[in-house]
Image (cartoon, rainbow, N blue to C red; front, side, top):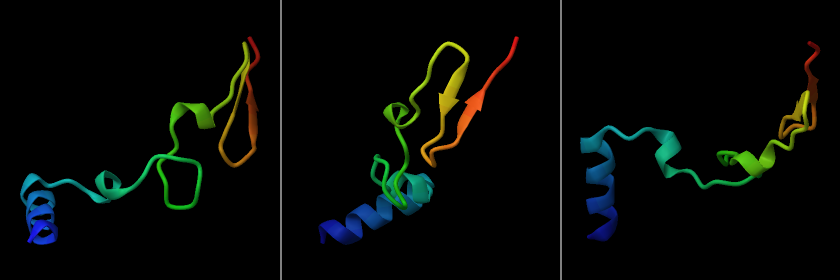
Length: 55
C-alpha cells in the first residue's frame, strides 16, 4: 500500500518528474550547487564547459 499512497500523493499534488529524482552529478540526477565550481569571473558547468565573463 505505501507505493500506491505515494503515487496518489504525487498525482494529486501535481509534482513533476523532478520531484522523483535524486540530487547528484550522475545521469538523470538534479545537480546541486557543488556541481558548479566557480571563481571571480568564471563558472564551470557539470558537463565540464567553462563559462568566462569579461567586464
